[in-house]
View (cartoon, rainbow, N blue to C red):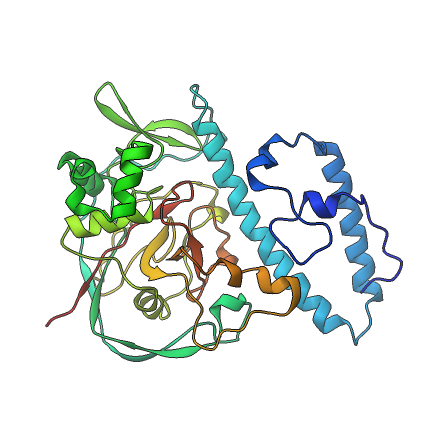
Length: 364
């Protein structure tokens, strides 16, 4: 798109390639990326300035014929950068949590008042044939397409996320010692990884604490439980006599509400207790706070076709062995979230802000 573009460094295509196979440079093995000590921060800033200058030239010089495709790729790149901004926050927390001094990313972060959570309720939704997927209005990744129809039975969705207090009852009931509650792979992780509580929870002097980006803090019972795996979310739902929602149920429920919640824009960097509501027919915390595990495997929608070339690797090749999450988190940008957004992770992974919303069949 930009004639005579000068590459900043010939090795950076290889160094900064996340996972694309259809490039000449290849990519660095993920387990070894933490060992890379160069380029320096100063060089990265120089690289950024180089790219910014090239982008300004692109805006001025790109032909009308080339601009539609250039704009489409730029839009994907900007949304991809937002994903990495979220990953930077969660990776910082993960790294700090391994330090026995429990350092704070920002010591002045607001603290949610210690409070008792309100009673969990359920909101009923009708079944029927519903439209699912991105509508084409605004940006959407290829895994949100094509928009299609799905059949739903009537269901009920919890009106807020599961709290730390509710999850503590699960722990105190011996759930991590009860194989009857767990999927086989989940029970294997309990045995091999010695799970006894969510990631970042610490029992100190017989009181639970949680590592946050403001350092170690006493556990707030009213906050949403987060940093749990799919296996833990599934086991909790089974213990509670409920289930996780499917991604179709979640999207149908969320589609009628504005994208509002506790996002990274608020700079809290931590989930907040559900706000009280006088309307018990409206689910809370659908967006922000924690990504919500669903019962749906990450699979292509009917009629899905990946984009040609390397961009086709962005989502499609990961549609195996992963589960769908919805809603965004306290580390997600507000303008990055939408009802049709499909996040996905392996079922054992816990370092992202991942929480639990319960669902149940509506047998009325």
